[in-house]
Image (cartoon, rainbow, N blue to C red; front, side, top):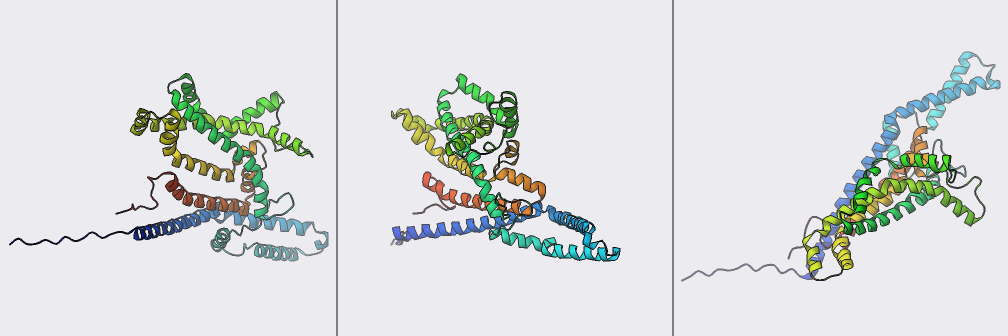
Amino acid sequence: MAESTLETPLPVVTPKKAHESTLIRVAKYMAVRLITMAFTVVIGLYLTILIANMGGYVDQIRRGEIRENTQQQVMNDPALRSLSASQRVKLIEDRVISEEKRLGLDKPFAIRSFAFLKDAITLNLGFAEFLNADNGSRQVKIIVLERLPSTLILFGATNIILFFATLFAALSLSRQYGSLLDRFVIATSPMSAAPGWFYGIFLIVIFAAYLHVLPFGGMVDVPPPDNKVDYALSMLKHLTLPALALALNQVAFAIYNNRTFFLIYSSEDYVEMAKAKGLTARDVERKYILRPTLPTNITNFAFLLIGVWGGAPIFEGVFNWPGLGRTQLIAAGLFDTPVIVGTTVIFAYLLAITVFLLDFVYALVDPRVKIGNESAKS
């Protein structure tokens, strides 16, 4: 008599259970990502604090400045000339101790660094030590908000226009592989190796110093025009050279890079199959070439927008552009730690939020991308 075999029935996964499993997986993934990014941001901010303070050496510089300024004040004060030498020394020491205590320099830097870190994490940006806004305020928040529009006008508008222009120019160039224009772009792509401020210097020499047709720098004429139309035209005139310098630095390489990217995707088998089905060239490009490249292009665009926040210190310095980059350059020269840390804090938060959101954007634009490292199981 043959033995009967019992087959274990497979568990039935209902749509409700599958939905709950997906939500749990996504929630776990989000929690892990948030914890990881929070840890990364904290480490990055603390390293910034250490670097901005040169590991505590800036405190020694400030103590020296306090002592020197106090000595000059006491020696040059006519009301204190009647004091004896010992009395002056004691007065200087008392004032130095009082000023160091007011600035918190009486505590070890290791302890103060964690206080700085706490303020940075809670976005308590505090007050600048040397810089101030146009209205006289030393609040880092006000200084940043005052300089941000200038940086957005220059880098935001210019980079966004260049991004989309080079993207569609590269797509057009990928159809002309091996043409004279294609070889010209390949030959000129190494121009991007030189920084934008390098081209800016040559443009200033040619168009401002020699031809006298464009201004040397600044954002508007001095004094600024009262009429809004004249003000906008003045700003556009001052924006021409910086925008041209950025274009010379970015255009050739961006077109070459995207063109190569599109060529790789255009040689895939599914693209040839789409062409064999009789789809138009426009449909093939939009559905079979552009769509698979969306995650990469979205990433590039997102980081481009984040990069706008920091500006470009040397570039803005060359053109005397009153943006965040030039502000950071001045703050670094003056060891103005609150300004340096404040701008870095906001950049770190923007970067972490963008990286976190990009994972979900990838899943929306590309069905092949799954949130988390698990795939759906039936």
